[in-house]
Length: 275
Length: 302
Image 1: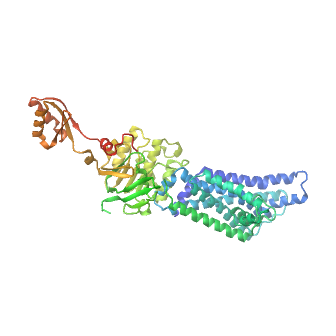
Image 2: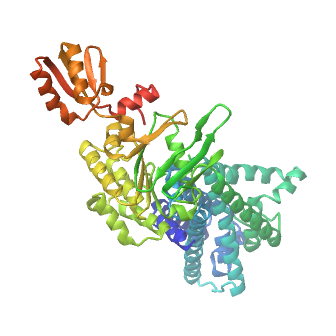
Image 3: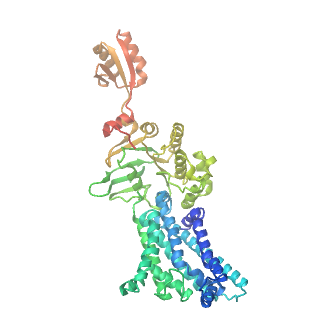
């Protein structure tokens, strides 16, 4: 298992596409989480109320750091991690390296476990690539504006780290699962993004008018990811944030989805012929 | 499983649906220490068979044992090196690709350098795999197959993409690798290559094994073709020299089943008897001729 993990990590660490994803994810988080709000705060558009301006400021300060960072996880983080997950497994089929590694010593499940554990390392990197720089940015903003520097409590930070990891991990495993099912990257990434940006948005949009859709939405992954992140962002939130379910419900559902994706991915990977 | 058998299949069958049978009740034995050629036309079922032996494809029915293990079992794979189609990570260098595989196999990086030396890839080992020529990719595939110092090597078209010099080098390499106890299962479309390298061959067509035999056995006994006049007198003299049972007459020529080294002696006897000898040459069936006879196949094979 350890050997497969190290081999899987060697492949990912040297893969430029993974770092490009991390870099873009980091840049977007800083740009839309701090740089643009800071510009807007300093030069407010006509019609912006004082309350709106204060709310904007609060999201940029250390006290709002967790909510600001996690607000991007359910939708944008989801997109990046679906892509990363699909790249990890789907590329093995695209390059046909799946046959090359399956004829080495470890069994199929160990090979897959190694790939997914290496992906897990990148889930942590993705999380830290946003939470770390966001914390620094919030500190800089507070210092520049002479605002109070009040960080969330240690318990809140731990909860936030855990919630962030869970959300990103579920999307990563979903991407990996799709990569295995469709034996490639293009369709798996495409369908993953279609779910995130189209299907889930439509269901969420119509759920206010149709109670059945609302009931279904409560059990879908994006609404639950949004619900968990929403427990840190307060009433307002980024796209993808939802208040349809509470944090406990969301946590349970995300675990269920994560485990289900893992089990199905392992079953297919273990039993399907490699032509 | 016989003690000398490294690979044994029993009625191994792969059926994709009711009408497509890729491998049909294949019974094959590859013995320890031999270089075994696996031949057949395109779509005959060779690659499907190799993939079943490596555990990549599950048989519909039948069984196989590879080094005493079920196909794909880690204990068996630990002693099998295989080259299927030289699929590697394009963004990694040749050396990095081998190191990734070495990690999977639990072999030290020293072995990577040895394998690179064996296939003469050291100089280009740090180049990205995507920059390699087809021949270099193929050589890297062979290096990957050698990482584990395997007891069994399975090579699917190892000379694909190699230039004539590369093919000759690969032939030498395979011969060297097949020395001692190591077994090589070689699938190749180059019959001349197989004839030169292999001890035994199996010929498959339509998923069925047509024959499994030694190369020498398939090519039959060596013979001499003699054209001399008058034919009856020549036949009489030849019969005295090699025995009546070893003389055949066909299309105005004699075929003498004997060692080609006796050509000079036979020629001298015929000439001394006053016969006009216009032709005398060794006759050997090539593996290609045997293959064509068995398969009735005139196109290329793979």
